[in-house]
Image (cartoon, rainbow, N blue to C red; front, side, top):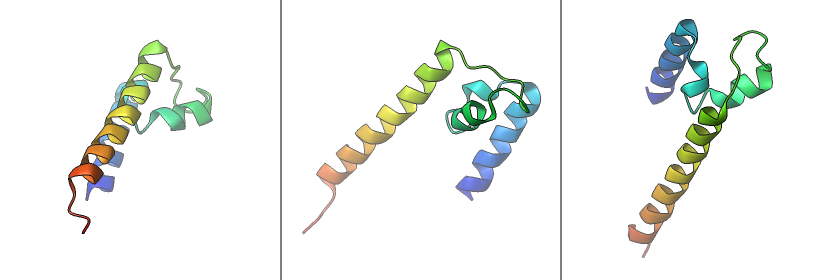
Length: 70
């Protein structure tokens, strides 16, 4: 369900021309090179992507430290 939701949200933002602000779509914009989407990445895109990576990493580490692993 979550994957379908993220695809739908990405498609909506792509139609509006704001794909560069969706963290899970930024790698696709980089691979596309701005050809199909017409989007170009600015510093905000790199900041959003880095923030998503660090929040995910931090959340995972906190989860692992608090999980019952016995």
